[in-house]
Structures are given as structure tokens and as C-alpha cells.
Amino acid sequence: MSEPLISLHNIVKSYRRGQQTVPVLSGVTFDIAAGEFLALMGPSGSGKSTLLNLIAGIDRPDSGQLIVAGEDIGRLPEAALADWRARHVGFIFQFYNLLPVLSALENVELPLLLKDMPRRERRERAELALSMVGLSDRLDHAPSELSGGQQQRVAIARALITDPTLIVADEPTGDLDRESANDVLRLMQRLNDEIGKTIIMVTHDSRAAGHAHAIMHLEKGELSGREEVGK
View 1 (spheres, rainbow, N blue to C red):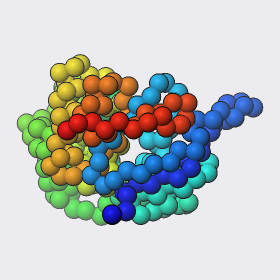
View 2 (cartoon, rainbow, N blue to C red):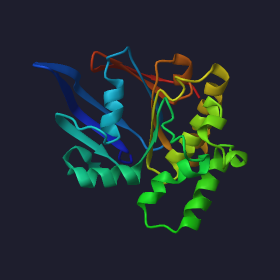
View 3 (cartoon, one colour):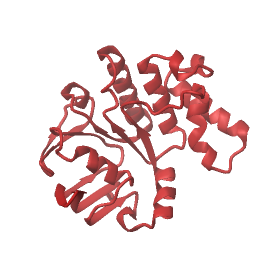
């Protein structure tokens, strides 16, 4: 058996709210294989977005071990953690997080500005990423000139541009109509099926979760079960 891409062991996380400590995750333990498409579901406050942020290296656990792509990311210094995120994680958010003054192409190029790469190569890679999400004819359009579904596809292209080990998506269809949401979910399935991207998606929508390989349920900071999705 190969080593899991992501391994969590007894992960604990809490936050301070004034003088009060609010527990969020309580001893979470599970593995995620490379090439898996996993949906995280649970009621508001169950800890699913916190768990996603820990796996993506945006936040740190209070205790426990969190191994992602062979690195114990909970122990990395801040600068090393930022470098690790840039190399390994592509982010997709509910509200796209596109810069309104930049074109679709320029928004997708942004992560590559941190790399020592010629401008021509950056543009070629951004054009390729946009073609992969079906937006070759929208390179020079500003976000305001695109539909919500098209903006989310630009965000997916931006997540792909560095060829990350892992894609994390936090409610990626939460701001879309049903048709646009289905288009985005089918695209994510293609990225998983055809190029083997590992995807972890937080969603409250059971129909969206049905596009994943498996659904992990959280309840009050603890795993309450894993459901395999028939594919």
C-alpha cells in the first residue's frame, strides 16, 4: 500500500473568543489517498472549513500531527509554510477572489509572479489553464464581464496554474445557480478523473457532494462517518 497523500492524527484546534476558549476540532484522525475527490460536510460550526484550512496550511493545529505531501506542515516555520503552500496547494473559494482591475488571463497569471519565470512562459501557461476550463475566448475579459460560473472557472484555472499537489475548495458552488454549479462540479470531476488532481471540497449541498468519491461527515468537531459515493 502506498503512503496516503494526507494523514491527520489526533488533530485538535480551538479559538479564543474574548476570555473563552472555543473548541472546534477534537482529535480528528483520518487519511486521504492521492487522487481522491473528498467532500467535507457538516452543519454550520462543525469544523469543516477549519479542517480544510489546516490541511491547506492556512492555519495550524493546537496539537496532533498533520502530514501533507510528505511534510509535517504543523511544524514548519511561517516562511517555509508559505513556500510549501505556493508549491503544493491550489485554492478555490466561494466568492472567486478575482481582482476586478485585471483580465481573466492576468488573474490566472498571479500565482506565477512569485516564481522566476519569463513573462512569455507565464502567459502561455495561463492561456493553457484557461483553455482547460473552456475559457480560451475570454482571456481579456474583466471579471465584471463574466458570469458567476465563468468567474469560478477562472478561479479554477488560477488554482491549476502552478500544477499543485492538492486543490482545496471551500463552498465552490455556493454563489452559483444550479446550472453553473453543475458545470463547475463536472469540471472538478474532470480534473480529478483525467489528470488525477486530489481535491478536498467543503460543501453544505448534498448534490454537490455527490460528485466526489467519498463524503466525510463532521459533527461538533468530530468525524461522524465516511460515506463512499458510487461512481
